[in-house]
Image (tube, rainbow, N blue to C red; front, side, top):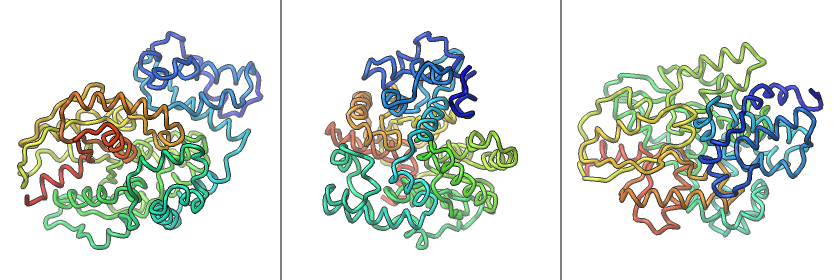
Length: 427
């Protein structure tokens, strides 16, 4: 075997070699469904990486597109007989690419300066919120960090309907986070998406947790690091992981809870970043044992108290990829919804199909993302649901955009928002 690639990429050779090229991944891959390109599907990714390691291929622009168009949704893994971990192989391929080609300076700034520092990130996001009011072209010139979105920036503006200028951390000081009768102590991990784009979700989550008897302490965490990881910048991801692990270790709480399925998933899998660092691997494993996603935690507290608002609603649920496949959490949110009085739960066809958001995928590859989203909207329309619930900020944004594009009357809500309305509203 040739040794022209990094040891990290060579380390996945046995994994990519497990691919038997059976083609079952074709039938389930959302991207192959659109492109019909063999390079877009799992066996294509694994073959490319294997040939790179064996020295039969060169990592060039022709291979960049297939590597970076993967959603990392893990649908292929769930339908693969040898369960080849294609999502991890693809990330290592991306890491190899940026080692050779380098990262855009804007991404270096984002991953190394903004995401590790919530205060700096808040400053730039606030600039973005004001810039959005001026129009996307002025936003682009105001925020050079967004230039890497390229020609799709004009389309991207419509995905996020509006941006707040006051974030959850700005509002949190006014919240009463101490219950009358404490039953559990929670460290609340603040996800970037909800903090900066949908702070009302963070408010709903923390208020509901307090209502259910939890004393909530807001952690001083930074970004979980997943954006850097999915791009292939593993060192930037490790930097943020180390910071968050130290914060989790110092947090006086029974559990660390986040309503962001993506954050919960990555926090639980920090050990994968430290395979060559036994001490950090042990610390990350201990930290992971304390992490709970929202519906995962709430499910453990069932049965819930009687609701205040008994309005009849038809509700369905969308499974975020980082929840159903990365964490195996599927039954919990459904069990919660089904036990709420006056809610008629209806299962959505292909509820676990990726919605096409995948972090910033809907901006970077807008046209492909919209085709995936249209398929999801077709499934949603069949349910006739008044409310579509989910647990991921990217999914919330994407699905809300899809509902607007399709002209549907369905309201998209995080499950914590829905539950606050039912259990804390006096309507």
